[in-house]
View 1 (cartoon, one colour):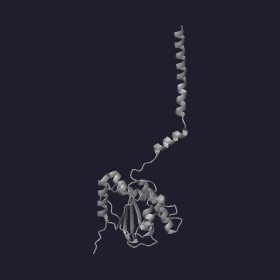
View 2 (spheres, helix red, strand yellow):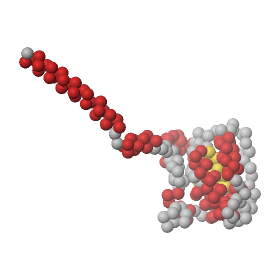
View 3 (cartoon, rainbow, N blue to C red):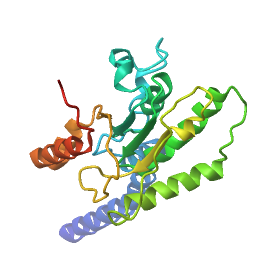
View 4 (tube, one colour):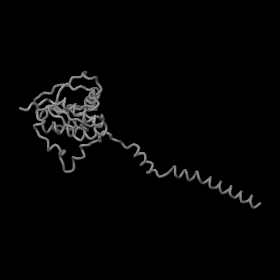
Length: 237
């Protein structure tokens, strides 16, 4: 009888414990809402394997700086009246600043990330409005989108399908920045796009290390080989 009573008590105790478990699980499942949100945020956190952070250049500006300090070490003669290319232009801030400050004949910015090219055209529209001293610009948002879509089509075009337009060699402050600066989404290392012109100056700022990380030594060799072919030959006397 004592054994039977003991077994009955054990069964009742286990049943009581089992009944308590779902309640405990619900508490854990319900959990702390903030903890669940933090976990969700971590999952949704963007990664930038190519260094294509938003405003990668922008963080250098605004802290008592009117412009990126790297611009101060660039020489005017490298850009004035010249055709220029900016590889890895990100959101286009540096690209536009150089074209505006040093009076480039033309400036093309390319970047691997279409989102950064979209940002670049947004900045171009903003700077163009400020440059003209008007509260409005001739270029509408729809036209900016069209330019972005066109740049995406060129990036995936078959080599030789497009002809790059020649820019007017004369530069004046009355010219709209849209006449000077353009952007295109392109993976410069892997791209099959054939350039129809050469450039007097090519920028590649804070980009080489990301190319090396993603494409290793072959990527760097490809980068410098393409840059060499795209540069206008200069003959020293």
